[in-house]
Image (cartoon, rainbow, N blue to C red; front, top):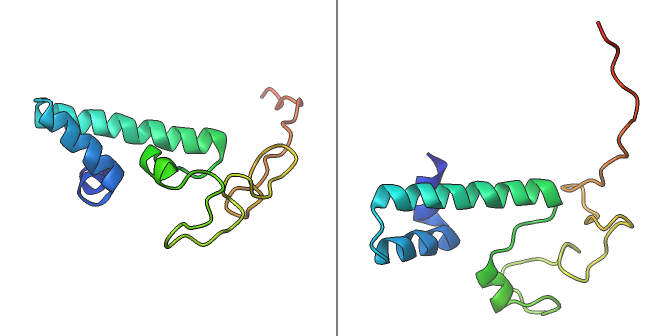
Length: 107
């Protein structure tokens, strides 16, 4: 399960898991809750097409702050250049095309 690796290596997930354990939750319940939180974050990134930034990182480095250790400014930060539709302009996050209203043929 990817969540076990995330709990071991990702500070955001590790903190959440340890907080649940400290509240007295059983380990399996804490793992499933962490898994749900990870899936929700993945879905959010896929739906909004913006990079994931944890709440801890947002508090430590508010939008517009110039000092972000280890992070190269790629124009993907708040206030950076973006496309007219509001999506970040990056090869990693291409601007979506308009959906076609044409229906596929019925076979």
